[in-house]
Length: 373
Image (cartoon, rainbow, N blue to C red):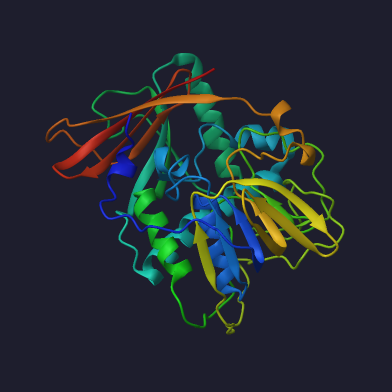
């Protein structure tokens, strides 16, 4: 089956396979939206970056097979976070995700990336009486965090709902167009300067340990996190509870507080290289540098970021014991002129998700049904 997003890119940029040993400041394994965004921000801080992707195209796996909603509304999560981790952690989670939406918008505007970015309201709805009370409690929880959202009983859907929690001013985009836009920024030659402090919160929270950074997969447990690690987050006054590995000498934290003015400054832009069809087989540390081994060559670097969807180096956290597989079924449907505004997902199982996408012959409804296996 084909991906709507992958098929939307007509003239894909072709990248070379890595065939020689090279050295760089940061080696990133995985050129999906997480790896690309890390590379973009690190270059803006003056680091030289190399991205390694095992597929022949960038962003062709998870990034290319997503609903591409940019939202801090992740089903009914905030009451759970408050009850299990406390109000402070729930608030950090909420506002770092809100910052992420604005960060993506700023990148799109600054770099002039044409990726069908559009502001939309986001809804979690139900037609199940047992779920209705959960939505009302979720609305109370979100509002208690100082994030005023609304419980509604009507939406733009073509059918009635018992109730929904509405997050206004969220967003949607074409993730492949955005990914190739980031790739163009990363691989463009020359030196430039930027104003202001760069914030790397647009792809979720990660933590920097002993030179290795891991993608914070939503399907993995975060137990045993090292609270002394510095984090790539915003609106954070203390380190967050994300993954860390042997944190003996963390690098400086890329943080920004939205309620504190930071004077602008200038830094030199680093360089970026992307290599596809390059399978990473192992990562080892020798003295003060990491050796990332591919089939026929190696990359030497001071830092390594594991941006693959699955953290394939099991010794770092035994993730194969903590993760599960999830299957989604997605179709793009032409329903004529019966389009509607907003992005929607129901609160109960099985999960159904709705949003519109821009096709060659007008808008199509992207309909997702998900079950776990």
